[in-house]
Length: 340
Image (cartoon, rainbow, N blue to C red):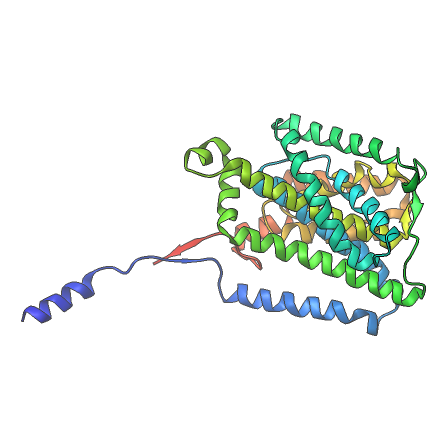
């Protein structure tokens, strides 16, 4: 009798809630993402090189948007100076290439080197907050540009070309496409892995209120610095891809131009800030706008500006952000859901 009562008492105890991050649809999404990457990797064998050349731009746009979203969407750091690391990535590639390193392997070295440079730079940038941080990051980018143009070996203020790259144009385009695809995949999956870690929870707390996060034991400075360095390394890799795709840099003003930050803001706002999928959708939207309206003169700017205004007014969460909010979809889930 005692045993039966104990078993009944135990069975009446409610089970603890279970924390989930995704569903069966999420698993399908991840499988689909893997298949998409495999198909994209095989494109140089089945399509003309002109198609893969266009896709190179889409790949580095997605990488740039993902890096800016990591900064602003998850760490609350609105930067207008990421072009500093894009330019450093391109010019660092000249240095490693001049020392005999292959530009494709050199991209990894460049990314790591620029990440190391970003670490001490963060101690200067983090003395500013809010709008001052945005303006200060822009100033840092201009200072970096002014330093770069002082070196004769880097072409002064007139830019320069890569000295050693694959001579066969077909192979060069294929290798450049695979490089861009690898950078894009590393950026998206790297951000996803970072947000799935404990640091991802810290970042979301920092974004909402860094003072409250600090009072709960979150190391705010370290978390922001890791994100800042990661975003710098990702932007540097994208800058190296831009350099390889163009066979050089036309001018420091172009590669250090603030238009890159404007593009990153546009893509993230259009797609949905604070989501892993949003920058991908935003980059795809901008890529299509640029492809079909870039030759329309002033109407191109009108279409881009009108798109940004309409999305900001009627879909403030962005295209994917609105869809995810209403339907609960997530290909790359980072939120926790409690189920009984």
